[in-house]
Length: 116
Image (cartoon, rainbow, N blue to C red):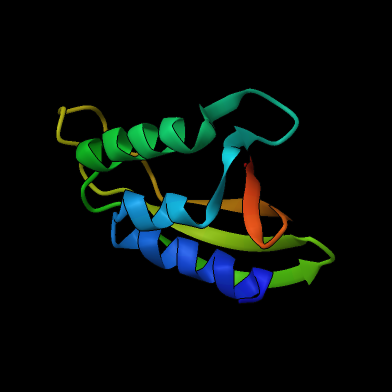
């Protein structure tokens, strides 16, 4: 499977809120982070639990790929994210765009960084 196909499969799993499939494409030490900043979810298990919590809070959460590009071992998506109402009654999050940079090592995703 190409890195692009893997990243697309990850986003499909994300949109299905299927955390187990999503993390199956990641290395054990993979993480999700803000670009050049704080790690949001660390390791496969941290990603699994963090996404499960986010999906419980925003059950309508979806990301749409607006643009895609492959550069070496990196896949870049410009994504349009909608969250919908939160289950905890917090204020509605306005839809937003984000650049997601998927880094790959040995056919698995090792890091996803978000530029917002």
